[in-house]
Image 1 (cartoon, one colour):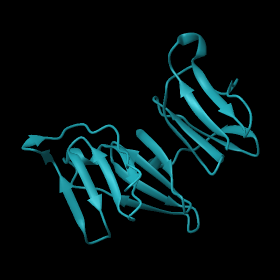
Image 2: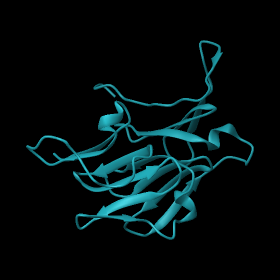
Image 3: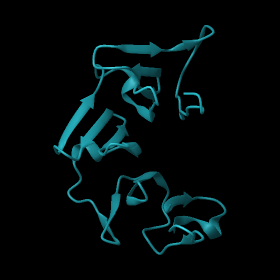
Image 4: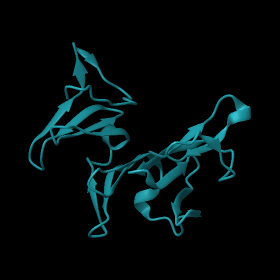
Length: 171
């Protein structure tokens, strides 16, 4: 399938790269050479990315557009991830947001203002249906609205600034 990626180094290859099925990746003329904070696409279509400085761009009908005015939920983005079932997860310094395409509603999971867990740095929709949320305070696992597990230590060592989540082939 097609895809997009952001290259930062080496400098001569810096920028946004795209490819279509059965084609080699190519450097696009899209956007600036600024650093892209996060990008994602759903089923080989609907690519979207966010610059570190806040601009968000989406490709609609083969044309890249800046999202303006930018909704509050798309400010201070740390990551963007499309759901397999539609919708868009947005991790920010203010918490985790879910944009539901079918109802055009945002859902916001947030702790009290002072909590370090509001700085959401990554997100994983696990094969068992749970949601794993990485933050500056550790890992939060949501199995449903009432079942939430917090992991702030492993082997008596505190977790800080988790930056990536992945699941192996066995879940």
